[in-house]
Length: 88
Image 1 (tube, rainbow, N blue to C red):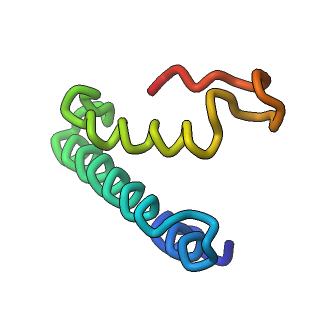
Image 2: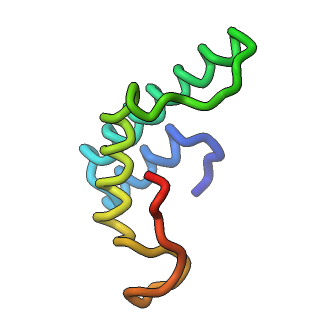
């Protein structure tokens, strides 16, 4: 990908048909929500850890797309191998 920022990377992937434009929009909305929350905490000199309950929709969007594209594992293309994504 020619760009280093999340927005344009998602645009390029959607334009190339690698991801659906609806998925791009969901990821952008989740990114925007979480980035805004972390920024707000930084302005308050607070630890930049967001409350999962307050951002359930963003988390569910990310998790749903993760499951769709990667399943339950990461790091190996074979089913049942790799690292479990249990933190979401």
